[in-house]
Image (cartoon, rainbow, N blue to C red; front, side, top):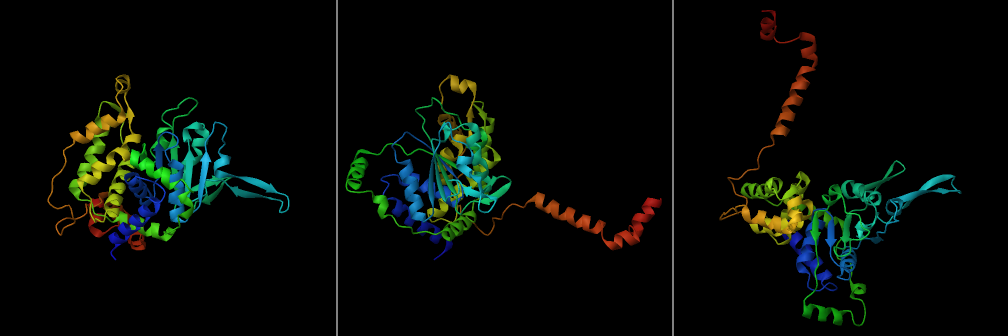
Length: 365
């Protein structure tokens, strides 16, 4: 089995396992798998009762890793999340008691209900994959996958997430209400018992690590790199937005289209991958301008207009060919040349003998 076939098979097994509980959300599950294979985090913004917690629990059960749910409230403290050092009278020393964030999958429910101080406790965990308590760092398990939820309807008593934290979420998703027949199936499926109790782990942490490595090797044609960067640049130049996509966002965009191609069984990215993932990956990173808010125009509509305005490249073949090479890294080359020059300058021969004869004659002249 090839590497790409391995990732496709892994995604299909996870998709089928989650489908034992979650009904009719194949696209959302695929985007969750994209985030998982990119080692990213997901922000779910939807109304209560849609199945956000059930989705997180089902995915955790399928991966066979620990799951913790944190209900964010205004009185929640950072130590309630990352843990605390407690004095032990028997050992006459402080010992660390881990918080709920030290789990494989963490559901931060209604994350905007806690204050900024508590919200910032997740920043280190999301970016650095460890937490620091009393000057001591504690590594998080692998994989560490954070799913945070927000209620877009009830905003009283909430604290909007700062831009720095929003930018750390790889994807923003919404589950939406099920179709009528899907909801009928939900009634029948949960009538007797909870199908989550029958879900068994089918994937291990090493499988996820291998899938991540395979996704990073998916080929992106230079023309598609330009297309992706044109969309990113357009968000920074659009007058309807006060803040465009950051370089962190463009890197996230790049990796997600690679992962989407891999779980669909392709070794290369297509323009459709970029168009499909542009809204969930970029939307939450944009800040509308005052005129945009005044006219009631949403960020989603602005982004849709940007995507439509950027010319879609047309190629017969997006696969890697013999004439296509990766662009060189001038910064890396410059660094190697500079290192060689520094080594020559401090070498013993240069120190003892001085500069070459032709340089000495030019200096004396």
